[in-house]
Length: 221
Ligand SMILES: C[S@@+](CC[C@H](N)C(=O)[O-])C[C@H]1O[C@@H](n2cnc3c(N)ncnc32)[C@H](O)[C@@H]1O
Image (cartoon, rainbow, N blue to C red; front, top):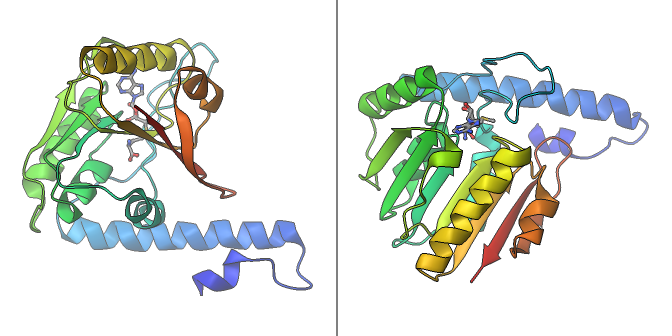
């Protein structure tokens, strides 16, 4: 069924195909949400916590779609000594999903919305399946003030912020690399600030084109 919508159907206008695919993904997302809720993970979104008046660098809580997690993370190739930092970890969907599948050294989520961080911590307590990575920590804080731990090897962003905030975060990553030089990968879902990250010295190692949710993996060091 999903494959049916993945390409244009002969004779059907492209716009109709795109609408059908979007509708199918919505249905699929609901089914996954229900499935994971049964295992204790309630990460439904979106929750927009402010007005879109053009003065803010961030968009509010929109969870990474389940479908994307299932294609993106296997393509990244995480290893047991990786340390994952997720900027804008929301209600914990990505961190807990990754922890349940990959035996990483540790996973850190940073989030500046108090309700979301409380939801993430509750989700971690309520999760009823084994965790391959036991060291999962959700930290309340502003990304621009968060000092990047020098053992972080993988960073995940689902377009959490843009503009000045994004550039300050890049500066924190560079500062951590200066303190302790090491390879670092950035996985960026919906890479709105692509040019800035390349300007900061990262190179593209993989790109996935998608009408709705493109993603890019960058590396440095
Ligand atoms: C698009 S959501 C992504 C949520 C989660 N990463 C996921 O993929 O399911 C972006 C998240 O970043 C958070 N955020 C935005 N700006 C932030 C900042 N400056 N510091 C910390 N968190 C921020 C928002 O509150 C929101 O939860």
